[in-house]
Image (tube, rainbow over all chains, first blue to last red; front, side, top):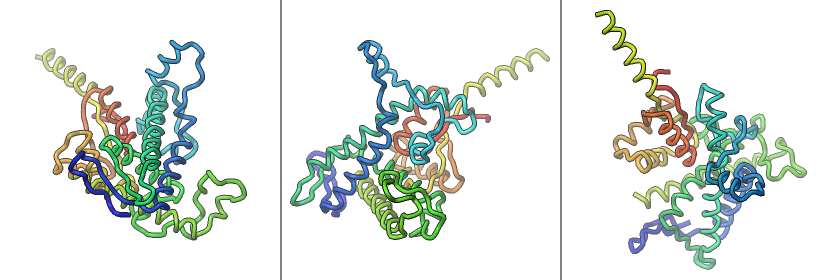
Length: 209
Length: 94
């Protein structure tokens, strides 16, 4: 990957990525969108007026923190010590927050879909950069939960989680493989991806400054 | 005299009741440069102020990034969750 740089003509940020890099971010953004998809969707309301109102207000959140720790991290409680206030806030905001995260992930996917196939050139307009920053954060938060990165020490220790008590598997490929079967190689690879995505974020921020 | 003191105390309590804060909590994932960028771009902090609060989050585990009415603090928290930062609302005197 050639890091992002600002195109002074139109304020867009331009980078070059290899095909595997482009498809990796594509896959991970799609996974975040899938993970939050159900929470972002409004239930089917037949009355168009009621449906429009529902859309506008954005109500329909869960009663409590989600049981999947990655979703719980992306849609956290708004009150640290007031469960009732957290539930009320969640009811008013969770669905729209999830929908915005899905929309950001889709912006990332769309921008990757139009990246130049031969040169790997990726061009992001300022609004797209905002979606990229948020989606990269959401992807990294999700990977961190799966890898069990919970403290600053974990984050700095390369290869953390190896030989540990097995954090949960990805959830996306639960077919034949249980979480315990996830090999150290897989975790090392995910750790590399996690670190690389951090580098992509740094590259965006440096180009923005 | 006594009455005056009482009324002052009541007024102070009312002021405290209406004051809420937005807290941002430390997490091991979000980059320090990203947190500082969020503070600058969303709250309009100078680089110096943003870095100061970011380091407070990093070193003390949390930092107050805004004070005001409850609804306003809830909007800030929602915006922080958009960015993937872990933020909460609470009463200023809690």
